[in-house]
Length: 522
Image (cartoon, rainbow, N blue to C red):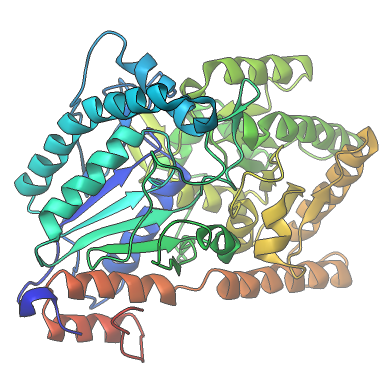
């Protein structure tokens, strides 16, 4: 596999990460962490990506994430392998309002007449020009070989996407090794988010939006073949690669809630340590504080689980909600009120976002996704995942995370549940059509938690055996639905096209257990 211009003399590449979410923590970033871990945690694999990775998390162009606009959160911490910029290429009094107006008009272009369209182009251009200068300078200062652009095909900030495309073209059009990887978890039509009864995104690309093109410096990857039909309708001859999300590898290690450790401090900070030590399980709601995630449904499920647990004389679990209430304070306030009304104040904890690595931030202990999954596992807990919109999740990783950890999962119905996972997934399915559906699902979920806690050879052998078989079936299904090979191929492709020496590419192939050579176009 020849590198561009025939220069293949690097040991590693400089990668930049541009994420359109405007959030300090998210499932997208956690999945990216899993990708980097695949290299760094594989023995004898050459370090193909240099650290730290220059990162722009979109704070300066997502005014809808008001708590983080435009400079990011007041307090947070990033892993050492990320270098996050706080650059604000554009700043004036009504800049946030202007970005939101542009987003709305891009989503509803048919409402614009000719003069309004021309004016919209001019307003987009006014913001795109300084952002293009920002990206060009940023790429040069960090000697960037490849950019990983996450969810930048969505139209949250068309001026910024315009600038990113132009800056990439200027840097790589002349044959320089490298380019830009567009990594889309969601697409315009299928991501049916609404605000105030209006679609946030257009149903299809239009004259104001950019999509990846069949040029040498573009690679396009989507996370599920469910998204593939939509891409075929886009104005481009470039076909995306289907590269499923990488699930976390939960390596066996000591994980105790009884010793003086980061885990016990985390639980103590949340005022649940004594309860957990007394047998209260940890349930996880792995969602952002975002209305379409349906966290209010998870809270209602938790109320039913509490009732069932009390009736059966079992310790009442805790529910840990991943998201940061600052992402949507109004929705977070509604969730807190609901928790109070249902008598769940003692049972629910909002984690304030899940970091990319476990650490003490100031005086506060925080656990990453891997450690939270381990915590749910050692306490015989589970996962509750209840989207309230069927057509928003392109994958929906809640069931996958539960399957990876080998713990029970309760889910509401959403399209990707069947489209992505298929019929072989063992989960408790919540019927939202009646109150009885909550009670039935909670009863079944609590029973699975009890059975999963049984030691082999104890209790009902048939119950324990059935659970073990279901858990193993789920793990096997995840290996099929979320294979690791596509990401291995993609990583080595961008490393090779970024100029990494062929002998190091071959060494990485051996370390990663790859047999076949990488196709030049994958």
